[in-house]
Image 1 (cartoon, rainbow, N blue to C red):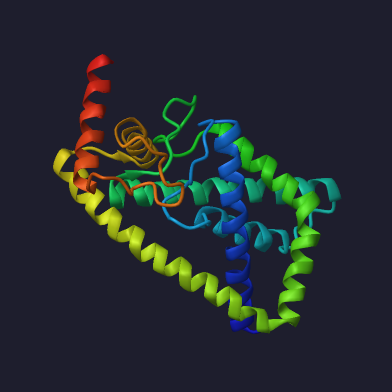
Image 2: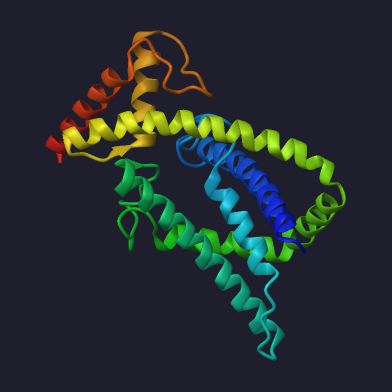
Length: 242
């Protein structure tokens, strides 16, 4: 298979994983964590790159032949490798945002055994369960989807459209992060992205008497600097209580 085809397949899987991961996170937050409809992640549109890279990694590992002479051990090692790779991807992504942008996209600081609040044993276990589910349930459907894509390369046009919208969204969000990073460095804090969005939501619903915009959670009557100042003040109050 040519490198160009492998790259297209990776992009195809990235698009699928990003979209399905976004759906998973929306329902997880609605029914298990926040108990609200929240647009998860750093971007505006319906995609989470973490899951996109995750699906590419899971599929790639599933295609690596592991031969120990014992079928059960081959399966176990493959699933373990998948689970570890997802945890590594999560750690790298979290570290990039914390160190490079002063932004926390998620926080496991209250979880036992966490490392820098980025990864923890509980969610590593969840990744392992997802890896097992992928291996036993999703490997064949994903492989069929990949084979279909290879035989219908005209669909690459729509994949390109998806990636084009994604890249525009990424540029917009990175521009937003530059402003947040500047504020965070001045205040010597790390901005918890979800708490910032929640703070904006509370202001909108309390003072503007309307529901926050699901797709554009930063759209409020106050500008970004005012929202960040409000967030920092609330953070100081929480620290005083502790």
